[in-house]
Length: 294
Image 1 (cartoon, rainbow, N blue to C red):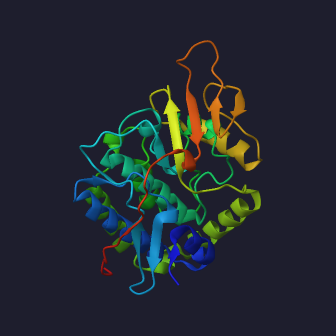
Image 2: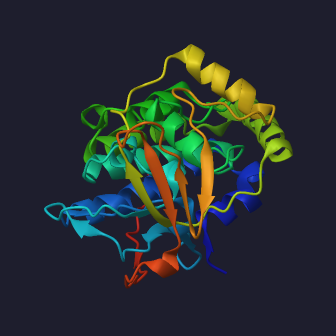
């Protein structure tokens, strides 16, 4: 039976070698490259719409209903899965090819850990402002350093510092070839599985489906320093909510949750909009390009 990447990882992650994980990343990059070659931005990449096809044992990208040509302007309403949305999009900039690359970084982390990013955090304003302020998922112990370096390039707060899809493919191919011998990573695989057990023990029941958001008045994205990352993750692991940046109060309104304004309209706000309120036709599809083994 075909499965999405999220379910596949939860069922099989403990048995996956790093070589197999690299191959999953390669499949996704090849599929996205085919989309970008058509001058199209996907805009909603996450593990729920990466599908595993048993017929050829490859992963491909689905849910192309919101893909748009690069020349199209983005609307104020952003449809997506918060942990995978690029910070510049949250800050009000238009989607670009580099926004998709940021989503690839989140998928790379998920493939390394077996869990969706920010599984210990509610998808709320606090997480949104932390993403803007450079907070990223904690690196999994035992992850190959070359893979870490590439992943960090892809989730850089500055889009121009992220690789394009062709460069990304070339670099992941080099990593794949470097680690052909699975024995090189046997100890790291054990450490990764231990990390996964900790995350399972502390994870929240988070809905990782896409929905419509409207982000307003967020600051320019930046990269966090190591100390900020450590503070966030140490608190998050203990189930304590912490915000890197300004703190605001929250209030609930009918069908929309937004950040309460303080003294002026320039304060950051995030709206969570029910999908039923948007008169938009969404046509999922599958974009799968087979990539031969190296």
